[in-house]
Structures are given as structure tokens and as C-alpha cells.
Image (cartoon, rainbow, N blue to C red; front, side):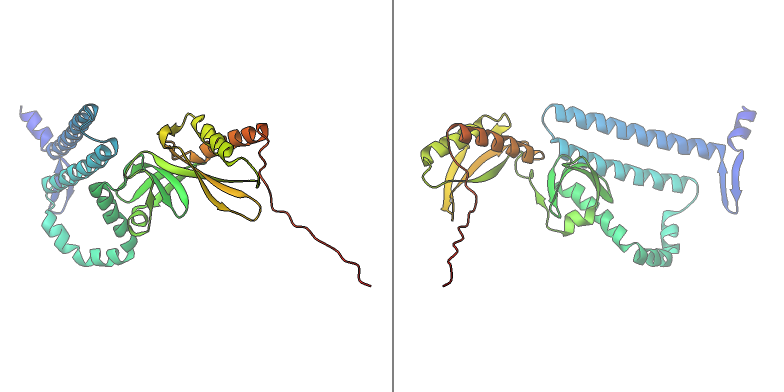
Length: 277
């Protein structure tokens, strides 16, 4: 027993007034294990709630991130107190240094605050599809400083959180997981407009990614210089890969137009020459 007591009081680090003993190190390890266990239990509880449709997946991840950060902040504070470093003294003593550092890392600090706002507000969640600087990006992870996403060409993008908060960003999936899209097309004058409308609707309905089939709509939007212009409107959940969906529908339209002798015109110009006498 005496040997164990000596072992626990053995000094690993002895610098000035700060002494780190085996007992203190074991308590620190125990605190960290407890923190990880609490985080694991909370994660299990949240995912269990999701199975009962009580939480949206994006909201769940945001809530879990906030809880995890809070737990680790509390854990680090307890550890510092355990080894004899007073948090209040540390903050007061380093105030001037923090001001100087803060000026240099102002943008980084801005990104951190933006990350907290993103996680707390829930306006942007994991799985959302954003349009940032004309790029379509699917959000895969929201961190405290940056968010990670992927473009349509499978290129990973790291976005500073302040860019999402401060700039105008379109969230294609904020209100709903489906969005209405359009395809514009012109046909030659003299074409049967009822047949054109029928073919456009059939072409959209033939694609498996089209939802709300009753809401597929065709509009005659104008009379151009060389064509009668139509607009095909449809809803789809495949927002991230919508350009491929549009391409498939355009191919179907082209095949059906050829089969029914409907011409897609192109601009033409007649040039007349006159002989000077």
C-alpha cells in the first residue's frame, strides 16, 4: 500500500509551482475517457431519436457538433484546473497577448463565430445543396472554422464558414428536397404546337427522376425570330445531378422530334448581291 502511494505521488514533471504526478496524470486520463464516453452515449441517444423520426439528419449532426464542442471545452477547463492552472488567471494574464493575436487571426476568428452560427441556426445542414459563387456544392461536413463539400465533378471544396454566412448563398434544399427546373426549346414555325406540348410532357414523364408528374407543365413563352419558343417545367429530387437529368430529357425530346418530323430551327441569314451597272 505504501509502495502504491509512493507510485501515485511520483513526480513526472516538476517546473516551478507546477507539479505533475502519476496520480494527476491518471485523473486526467480518467477525465478524458469520461468525456469520450459521454460523447458516445449522447451520439447513440441522438441517432436512436433519429430512428423514430424525431430529428432530421442535418439537425442531428449540427446538434451533436455543438454538444461535442461544449463537452471538450468543459473537459479541457477541468484538466487545466486539475493540474493547477487557474483559467481566470490564465485569461487575465494573457489578455494583452490575445489582443495582439486576435488582430492577426481576425478572419479565422470570424470563421469560428460563423461556424457556431451555422450549427446553431440550422439554415445550412449536412446534405444541403448550395450555390456558392455560381458553383453547386453538396455539403458533407460543417466544422467550427470551415465546411467541406463536393462539386458536381466530385472535386472536394473547403469553404470558410464566414463565406456562407456573409455572402449571398442559394440553398436549393432549405425548404424542400425537390425543386422545379426548366428546359427551354424552340421549334420551327408551322409545327403542331399541341403535338410539341405532348412530346415535351411525355419526354419529362419518361425520366425516373421526375417527381410530382401531375405538375409537369409546358408553356409557350414567345415567338422568336426563327422559332416558336416553349418552356418545359418539372420537379426533381436529384438537384445535385440535375444537369444530367436535363441532358437525358433533351435527348428524348430530340429523338421524338425527329420521329414526328418536328424541326428545331437555327438562325439563318439571306444575303442578296446586286450587280452594279
